Amino acid sequence: MAGPTTVDLELDCRGMLCPVPVIHLGKRYAEVPVGGLIGVVATDVAARTDVPAWCRMRGQEYVGEDAAPDGTPRYLVRRLR
Image (cartoon, rainbow, N blue to C red; front, side, top):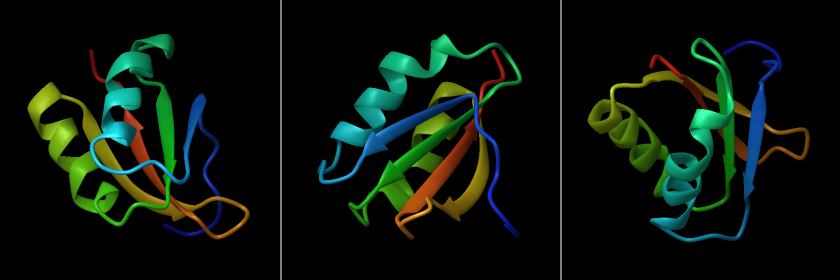
């Protein structure tokens, strides 16, 4: 993705290990309206596969990856339902 993306909710999961980032995502994604975008900022490399897998299992859209201002990977999820 080019440039920073504006999100409706950003989850700071730096320092959390698998599966904690997707647990936080699962607990909080309903806080955004349908069509809203959630950013999961995570230092755990497993999040790169865990977040898209969570989206497939939960019927949400994995939009892609960009980076937080400090360069930490940020995984983008669109709430579909």
